[in-house]
Image (cartoon, rainbow, N blue to C red; front, side, top):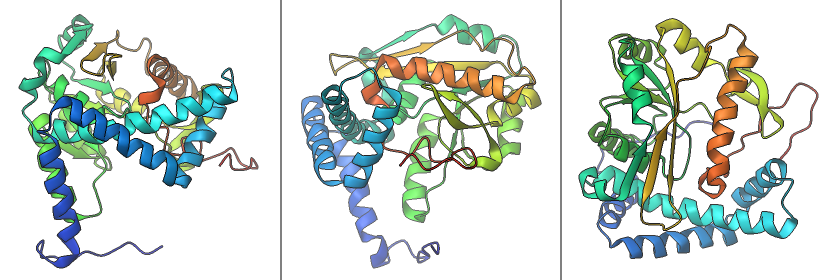
Length: 304
């Protein structure tokens, strides 16, 4: 499929829907908390009922990863996933468009001593984040305690890319294109912490197969490569919305041990074990809507 081209002038009618979406995100960021929750659940319910392709992907992921649940329990989890990701739209808007200081009273940060210990080594830090629905709000809350850069995927739409990057630059020190490995290494070597999310399927050429919820999953090798190139400790970061739906918890665990080990599969397995551990705390808040098991070992049929 050919990549869509966009006009250079950002006021071209092509961008009017994007301008409307940006305005909607800015407005929604300032809505009362209960209204955000209600609208988020409604948006999620709409997706659950009508976005059949994403629902199929989510149902497949849940069936593969939570075989211990009954069929009705799996379906209930799928619905909660859509609701959580709907709320995540409003959490993202809040993280991008509001000063995170107004949420300080809503966040508890555990394990900060592990990050302080990592920073004291003077080698920079590689932070393992995860694609939870709370991802961008989690970044905003993290900025109240620690500075960090972020690795991200640029958006194809130039207007939304500009909006998104400017928003993230207010949260993080610098937003770095995921293809800019030199930029990531340079920032870490200069003593910065860089937030990086290695939990998606980027294809066979950059991955090894490692277990994730008991299933061989294409897992990117770049985490170990960056750690090897920089000597930086790799810090696992958990973050989620609490059961009261009003407060959030962030938590650093100790730096990964014996990482990198020199064995790509062992390193990928260690990363996946942490990610699985974090997801199991609040499985409904993970982005199960993406095809985590898209790439299969040669000769194995698609799971979707």
